[in-house]
View 1 (cartoon, rainbow, N blue to C red):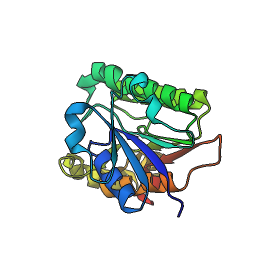
View 2 (cartoon, rainbow, N blue to C red):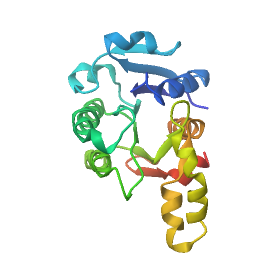
View 3 (cartoon, rainbow, N blue to C red):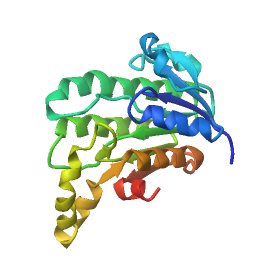
Length: 217
């Protein structure tokens, strides 16, 4: 297995910490972008890059040609009431990450978007789709993951919806939506991200992994 140089934004968060730990355990060289106040949360074995994910100028110089950049910055526990935060944090951070990635000529950009279309969370979906368009317009080699909800510690309330998902999956008219908006576990999400890092798509292409792809990782 080829060792990768991986730069993670959002590497101190719910998915990011677990991903960083998994990558280090597999021998990859990992750098995590963190604010000065969050340095203590960076997993052992990672190099710390102090900067602001909303400002490309604060971390672009830490990227190198050929790097894999995993962008995980986002508003915690997204809900319809956080539309302003999606613009301030999610949109600003993906704009900064794409700009820095272009300047550094990185090798592979990995972005966690969201499943769509969906009957709710329209403001969140709008911002994440804008992020996907930015990546495509920049001509980056990329992997985009589209989970709907990632189950894990502190993120378990949708478990009660599992019987509904099962029911919707029985009918052809609703099966596609049930699969696209299906739940994935934190373990499946980390496995899918590790797989994306270790197996990049063809240069110049954008690969999309939907919820069924993530669960199969």
